[in-house]
Image 1 (cartoon, helix red, strand yellow):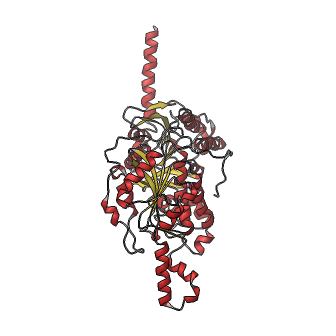
Image 2: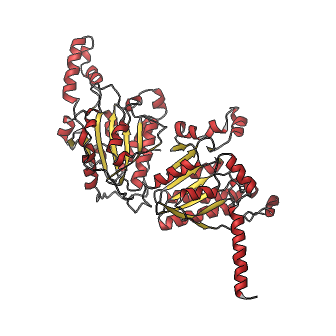
Image 3: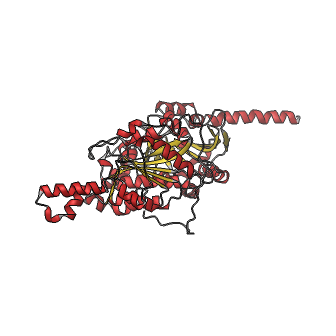
Length: 516
């Protein structure tokens, strides 16, 4: 037999093995996956990455378990597809769990495949996208499976703030498995086919007697609206994968690179006369802050995150002159834009992500204060509000702030004020920077006149004349400039352009101790 023949034999076997691996758990299980409205692990990878760019690793890896008859079934790939490819030409590492192979359960070898690509992502400075669809730990392997999880968790921790990590939950993700996505930067879920919980409905019923469905306990709606675990929920796998591609386009490859520069077709100095009338004459009338965000952004493109949770604050990405900018904005349409526990947590997490990855932050302010009440105080608003304050004060990226209307009390300081090292602080002519609203302030200052409505009205008018404008703060240098609303895009774009070379020296520390 010539070497050519043996080569051909091996090539024939390679093709046969590849075809077998690509089938995953076999046609019947693939059909069952499709019947649930879910794509297979490989179909997901193909849709996520640029066509023909996927390079697979460890296609032929099998588990090494011999208990409970496991030696009889050793599927190639061991229930997870791993490798690298590109998204719009930029490299990413991917793992995609295969539910058709032993329910996507995690074995020691399954975990080591994931660890391998995460190590490579760290070494080569590229994002990791994990697609979760797994029944959890492979029980037949016992503690080996748990050790595998632990190894993955450790890498999530080491990679945090070094390379972006995105989790796509496209099926079950339960028990200890939830903690890997929980440590990543963004979590996307799919409605009706994905869920996350630490303990499932059956255990809940046994322990607490609560009757709850998997969807109610940990479905996409629960995690986008109530728990804030997930950043967004989508109708199906295809939409979720398309949105993940769009998100990656905003992010840098790693913490040592700048975010990508995209071609843009929108004049940076574009004037927007409609903004002159965005803020209503009546200080208590709401308006939609999203209108301002979209009118500032290149091509009006705004990528919102956690849009269903704590709607009184808005977070997400825009581009200015083709460069990514993170936006945090109070939303007067919801609870008058007040800060509370949920909004502070949401914004703090976002600000810290931007700071990790060198994404400048634009803050748009219309905030009447913190939400009062026992629920807030008992829930620890002091601690949670401090997270946002801390995140802004700690961030060394370029920070540009625009006050559109109210900036009262502690909330003024917290929202990227000059005192927390913001670089540019602009105010619109409609801005009011004060310790509190005129009526409340007057009732405290002129307590002796409380019975006299006429006097009180005069005092209130005097207070408004003195403080219901941006000038006192501007006199102190807390506001750099009062700007015309129509020119905001131009002024903000120029501000960020001037800050591209910003560097800040911070004192050495092992790490900080943010009030968690």
